[in-house]
Image 1 (cartoon, rainbow, N blue to C red):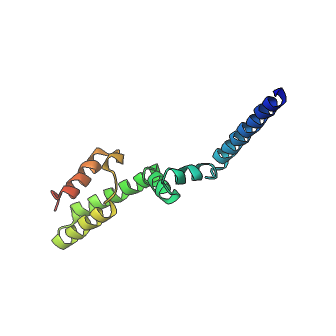
Image 2: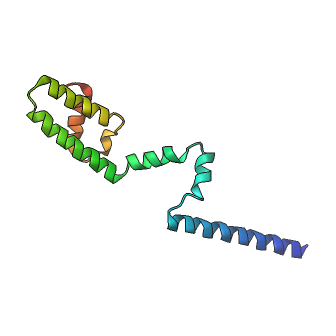
Image 3: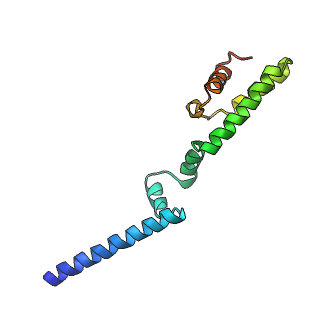
Length: 121
């Protein structure tokens, strides 16, 4: 009985060691070998999770902020109502699913809120 108990502990130790090494290797190499089955089991596919991570990423937010600042300048200099409407439609299309709270610039936050609410025409 002691021998079986010792073998069970040894097997458990090997399994824990293997999972630990695999997990560290996965983190170190940036692969999804370990996390992918858990994401699938939780009902989230990689594309959905990766998209959320991308949309909350700093480079995406900075890109949206730069584009929004550019459109704000263009809108302030535009005098033709058709041109203004085209710029507003572009802003609404490109920022439709963008979370305003991710913007750090208070003036850009307010500008996007105003465009979405229709107070800027």
